Structures are given as structure tokens and as C-alpha cells.
Image (cartoon, rainbow, N blue to C red; front, side):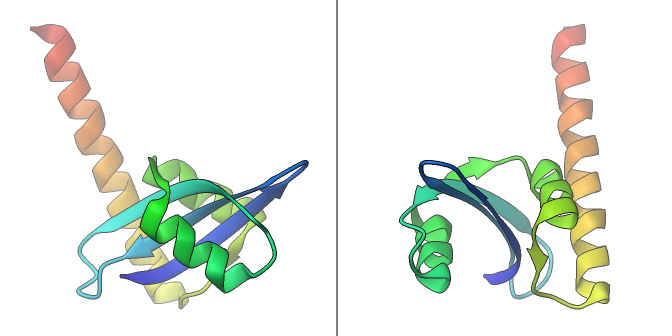
Length: 100
């Protein structure tokens, strides 16, 4: 997995969201976790390994507005397109389920 962006929220604790893409650029995932906040790379690795799943489109939006992208514009565009496709599939599945 390749990290494409992250964002931090701090108050009494540090909470991070990390957005990653598979090496073949076909799948994206987002994770969230509370971390120590002392070493950014260690915290990112911890979130990738132990974080809870987080909605991809929301993660991409938060990173776009408040975080840091660590990929090219071309890769970021792929991330956004994959996130939108994933969100549409989720919405379609929810619509089908509620219609039954």
C-alpha cells in the first residue's frame, strides 16, 4: 500500500486519518486512529496497521481541505475517482437494500 495523504486533529489527543492506495492503483482505503503524536511516520504506520476503517470519500475531502497529500496530482485524481466510484456503489447498494 502506498500512502497518498493524511490529516491530523489534535486536542487532548492526536487523531489521524490516513488514505492509502494499492500499488496497482486499483483500490483505496482510509483508516483512523488515536496516536501518540510524537513521530509522524510511526503514527502513520500505526494507523495503517491498526486503525479503524474510515469512509474513503470523507477522508479524501478532509485531506484535501486540512491535510497533506503525498502523491502527484495524477495519482490524487485517480484517488478521487476511485472514492467517488466506491461511494456510488455504496449508495446503489443501500438503495437496492431499502427497496427490498
